[in-house]
Length: 251
Image (cartoon, rainbow, N blue to C red; front, side):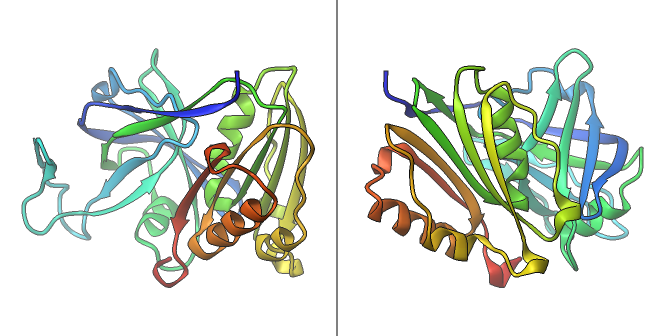
């Protein structure tokens, strides 16, 4: 059966979660582990799911929203929020792990860089999941550092008899991470500090023969370029899952 993308919806819930561990897995990637009894029933079945994290404003406690039919209703002023892909979830220990790219002057980045056990934030979602069903002759995963959690999750869930390629742009060689998979995987790391980037790579991208599936997540202009290149190469739109993870002017 050809690979298809199906969307499932999840009940909206708001949870308060507490930091239990914080570490640097690379110089510019922080891994934060949270725990909470409120994580009972949490589910993230899609490899590129995103949850919304709510950060308390400086000097203020995290407010509590009301959950309604239209989502969360916050008292004024509402907390800052950003969307992230869950990296790991353990339903036995009720622990959730999220990886944060660290960059200059970002609400979530600043919070993650200073996070310590006992810190508390809010979480909502995921509201929905895109689930891949069926089989493909090959899969191509394209992204920058912000897409690494999703790419890593996808590679981890692939069966042993599958073939995948990953093309990932990171700041430098120090930002490369081990990527576990039972599949046969060819990984290309692009290092921005060496002048390598997804934009240039996409200009010469070619696809293998057979029926494939492509996941692409990165800065919005790069994703638009990927869409155009993949369309020119004849990839059906139904065989592509593309997402704008950030915009340059708003990063």
